[in-house]
Image 1 (cartoon, rainbow, N blue to C red):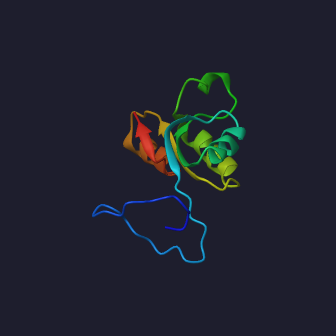
Image 2 (spheres, rainbow, N blue to C red):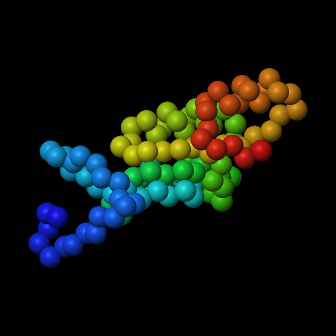
Amino acid sequence: DIQPGVTIVIGPGTDVIAGEGKILTAGGFDSHIHFICPQQIEHALMSGVTSMLGGGTGPSHGTYATTCTPGPWHMMRMMQSLDAFPVNLGISGKGNASRPVRWRRWCLPAPVRSNC
């Protein structure tokens, strides 16, 4: 207890971690994000969200209403664009193929979640 007037109950389900010399902040997880602009990440961090999962292709009219990133080219571009941000990000992808070899090629960017 390091704040005056704050009592935190530590019970059998509490996960205790060593925090000496660190600034520890609990982070939220947003599992339904439409990646449409980089400002979303700044807004998420300001509200306590430190991890996001979703998709899209940025400010494209075709992906405003989706949380999936279509195909390997878009997946790689999204991964490149998100490298600069200090947040945990997962990109979900979608696609289909009639031959397994094409599907495996699509999976190379390694989406976190795939909707087929």
